[in-house]
Image 1 (cartoon, rainbow, N blue to C red):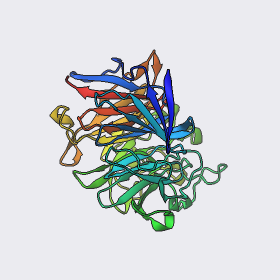
Image 2: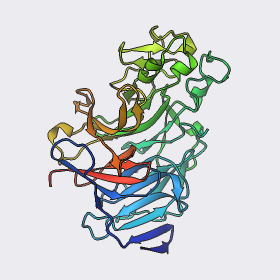
Image 3: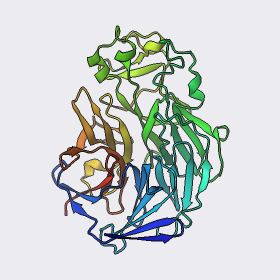
Image 4: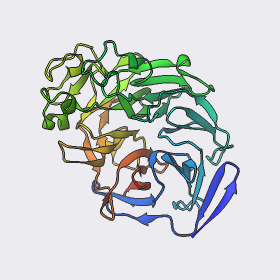
Length: 401
């Protein structure tokens, strides 16, 4: 039973029943425990936590006409006893910087001024700071990150797998005409309204689709993780077997600065040959080295794992090895690993990956149903939250008591 109250810009749901439900299902390193703090939110994508410990959840599909849910700890007892819903657009991107909450639809970006309680001052009237981004209903999430100098970075993924503009052809145009509006990162001003492509800096290109990205305050730079291309066997069965298609290409992490080029669609990274390989649409045969002089990845992950969020951990409640390292939410499944839907961790040292990734949280099951990690956020107390966009569950992971 719940009570629905209407407040300006918000739907407020005061929850009568206890909101926290113990989970104890995840496989975690020794000393870590988890709790499910919310369920049934729908397509819970990226999440952020404000200074007060409240959790904002961006929805990929509207729930009761709203696309953002704020989980509020009213009694300051660690229990989210209230939901506040606002925003009439679906999407993925969500970020807090200073006193602003930034949120994206699939073709625009908005921002909300937050009050001293960490809530939007006027949730019914956000500022639209970016509009007109390409949206073809495929790989269209506009993931975002904000730096410390009033710049916002927006991913615009490619709706085409490898720039095959003509679906009947297996030869792609060179240069790829799509790169002027998709397949990269655009830098806009975080405090200017109604910006379009013409107002942006084309910050990085040649990345097919970047759903996971984060601003690293230690290095003062942007880190991204790319979803790799697919359909190598379907399009080129004479060059790639079904088994190879399940193992290629790697999902890849980069530190990107202005002018970076990841090589898509001209080449991809082969984790077994440990090199950039020319795409078959551009004359590759599965072995020929790429010639585009693309940025080499800092870390690689198995193909088709679908890295959907990245979070640099800056807290001090987890063991020292996690400090400044990157957590990654994997939303897909690797045919090679025969597993997926997990949270990984990449140790960092001096601003660079110090070792290969490891599995941090696994076994995202509720009543034997598989759930898909999507968003990551760090709380003021050093715990982290993980969202699941299959049913809308939010997990809290903490260390010790």
